[in-house]
Length: 71
Image (cartoon, rainbow, N blue to C red; front, top):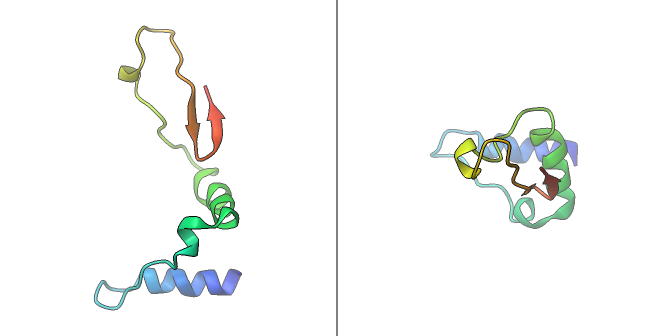
């Protein structure tokens, strides 16, 4: 899938007059979802909430982020 993925990403990143969107499978495939989680989300920080979401200092709020349960 490596070369195919690179070609599809190249098509997305072209100037807007030539660009194409990602194929539908990228929005529905569990395999591609897992790959996105590993390659895009895992290596960096992601905001999953704000302090204003909590009722009191010291409180926690469980969230589900891309299928990963977090507290």
